[in-house]
Length: 423
RNA sequence: GGUGGGGUGACGGAGUUGGUCGAUCGUGACGGUCUCGAAAACCGUUGUACCCUCUGGGUACCGUGGGUUCGAAUCCCACCCCCACCGCCA
Image (cartoon, rainbow, N blue to C red):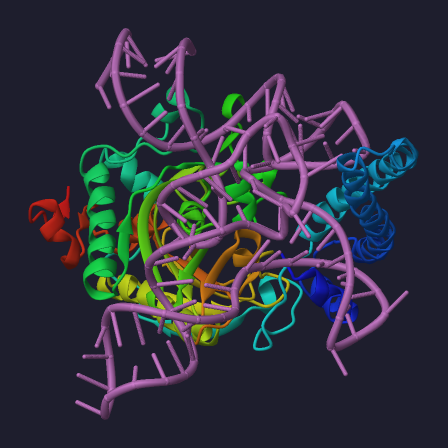
């Protein structure tokens, strides 16, 4: 959420940002309501002031044993007006809050203006597609042939597009998780967290998935809880409504969690195999930082994600998202895609974003400056480090051999009892 | 799920026969005295948000939301969370 005062003072800048991001928000209605609400505050504050003064007088009169029925009768009417104003104000504030939550974050000045993903800007590439096989077989074919992926069984358990990993496939999944967590904790300085994978409404609202993406989330009605769509949700809410001493910043967390996405409305698009699924594993990185450092930290976090892919020797490309492809809450974002030889497509496996203080304001995450100044909002950043299902796709398709086997990336072998290939 | 206890300012902890309570006190933090310096001691300062006709004035906030009242941290109702014990269970 943006600072309402900022919106009030810079409506045109905000309007442009909304347009650049391709979002819809009722900015004019918001500004109108904001002004009307402030007019009501003036009225009701004045009445409350009168009430306070008179109440004190009534107390004095009563103590002196004098008659106070006249001011009491008068204040009875004032109290009724106050109630009216307050009810009107509460309704307006509710609407203001709703509208303000629909205003997206401002893109950073370094972000190119563009309509959609076609206008994203390539930043760098790394690695070459492997040439282990001339004609790579799509991962769903080789995966089923080797008995490590079972796409039919999921229908019996939950429905389509919930992948089932079996045997060496499950082991590969577990090895990847452990490898990534080890690199981030041992080499990149992140603290590992194992959080709940459900979150309440307030928590999901803080990170920005709600209210906009409610239809994309699994919801447990009985307890009004949501299955998390990303580890970002628990990690960002770890310090909700807290004031952190500046000396503790930056705080860096990493976590492995399953991620759940309904993918409403995306049927028919990339739906084969593991490319677009309702549940996938992900190792997430997250930082709470002092604002002036956030763009440097953003670069570092992105490099942390790249390190994983380099160690796995998976070719990737990194691009900066243009305004139109930037998510609702982000100010700047790099996406990392890996090459799927079997599908013949680049697949997004990491999205590294700087949210500046957008999430922090929603979540009430502040820091106390070392110089003793007033608490300020931290900047939050996060990135996948990296998403598992699509990484498995890339491994199965990049590491397959001409005789239909899968070589295990070197760095994963220690996590798989030295296994060098899946046959 | 049941019973009991509790949620107050950065923290600890008062205050519940409604009326100078935004809230005693202690700790911490900040400034000062003292000191070569530090500690100790002593003195002082120290919540947040919002509004306005803004070197000032005002309003709100004692878990959350309602209610009673001229007036509520204090009374009533609902909900949430925490702690303890019981039940159930991995």
